[in-house]
Length: 436
Image (cartoon, rainbow, N blue to C red; front, top):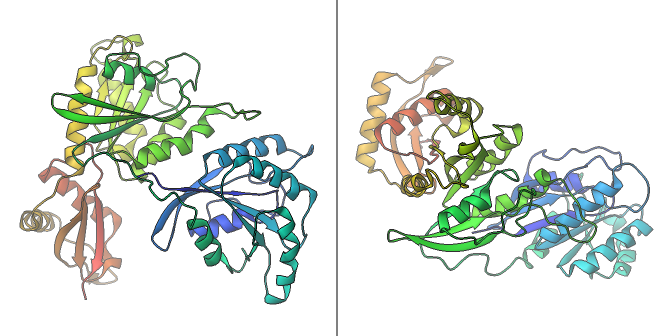
């Protein structure tokens, strides 16, 4: 299920990044008292009263010749286009400015729900300063203070009222949904067509030909699938943005709806830093992953080439050591028949449940092989473990003190679990919990 999206929009230096950091609970966005310091959209996940959502921190919108303003305006317009709800941030200390009015004009055109926030209202005596903001035409302004965290609850209450009521889909649990993510022009659309056996998706050598995420139902050997082809760059009005930045939110929304994510690499060009960033989104979302090396027909190779490329992938994508690798060519359709069985396997791993008694046998054998560590004279004691969830498989390990569970020992337990049970393609989570 795709999460609703909130975009925080406003002119520079009204405190958007401070509010963004407050909502997501960590310092993700740069905070600096210089207009225009937030040059890129920043994406993160948030939660409020059981509502999960994605949130975008945009650069400010301003009309003028100051540095970065054209780029910032473009990024904000794209964020507006992607959002379900817009939080329009203003500065209560400065009142309504001409730049605020220009932002308001852009927001009127969006036809999206807008919640007006007046920031820097740090004490009750300043609340009279919000009345002028009614003139912007977005109804009741919400006084907030980013520096003190005041008023954010009321603001998020109002924003969540505008979330889409039905953000899910109508596909049954037996349907395997998989998406293709990757930087532009790695051949995602060509691969969709190769799987379908027909030209269903526009294919072009121009990066960003795919305009929107497209759901394509598909059946093979009695198994139903839905292929989610993520969009590349669009051009709306004067919005022109680098494809790498533009594709992020679309990939996130496709990942959230997927059971399995195909991370598509360009075998001809090799691995670049952007590939790792894109793959990281799938890993962080806890989805099953298959790494697909496309355009393998264009690679000059001998009997060692595939093994050497696989070693490069393992070195660059250490966080995806559980993901199988498939080499193929969408153009010639060579080896494409190996992909669906790997998707099926990854989905099966993602849904795998382990009986508690068998799991604990594996855990106790692991401890016998490698005794638990000590810290400050106190030894970690593991009482028992149980699986509490799938998608991804999640295990809770009850111990005498969760603080004693070092990440290296947790990794050791994960490796022993993987050796005992086949979790090919799926991440697994281990949560240490102190037993009362």
